[in-house]
Image (tube, rainbow, N blue to C red; front, side, top):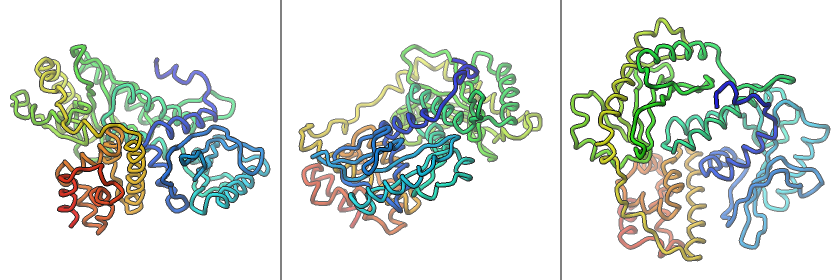
Length: 444
């Protein structure tokens, strides 16, 4: 679907509600980021089940809340909740903000002072002028959500389908921010970036005519260009070709990105495919990069004064693509996923599943506490997403001491290390004696 047709129909406020329900339900990272913002008012309980509700009835009147996150125990009793109100263009109806405040007070009376909070989500421009926002604990701008999603796209390895889904969600959110009453919705676009992109695409068509530059909204956070069209075998691993512009930095990179194949770095480094290319190998989390340094580019600045820098970047894309296509058969062999001896876990008994859920909640609490200290252990969330709570802790113990562990040492907070958590008596039986010995050596 072309970018021009993507938002031919209007996008409405309910699309924001739907986004919040889907993302808070399906993305542990988004929910953790969302709740970490609320740490001054809200503490997530050790719940058995987290449920999302759209337009649920309130506890103390017949009105409805746009979105509610609820934490429940095994008896389905509500332990805690977050009330979310979304606004795009309309203001509060008479008494609406006050009714939210009353509902929040009622929830806190029933559940506890830090077991309920209320959040207002709206475009930044709307939040800055909205009367009644003081009734909410936190005001979250849609632009902040977009920034979080863009950071995920820039820094994380993920399958092509998820990339496409997140890019579409970003466009929808930017459309919500750019709504004008009585007009069709359209994504936020910086005119200077759009002009730059058009000239960039023209030059790319000359330098790498077999590739196409992926369409972009050219919004405030768009600082990377992705290329499609490399001629690769049908069973070739998921691959992305991208040119990083940077944010007014001197040096960035042209990259070939192999998602979830960091384990293949050693095999690729030991071969001869990189000899004489000037390319380097880098690993970030689970992603393997083959990359070449390029000059930093400012897409908000005029194109012509940066022409030579852009040419160097596109030449790097051309060289990387030619190398990729030439060596595709050999790369397919070298990039085969390696057997992971830690992939197996304890038998999935009900007791083990319940304790695994409790461990997951404990790890999320560690994340929230670290976030308050200015450190976000996102690598731990990645492992939890892929391997579950128990598997994540086992991998962190089996791996060499991480940069995150060193960070906690400097902060004097080894009590927040997963090694300290694993040693707690409540997890007896989840980790073997060798793993516990490793934990003791690290935290003593």
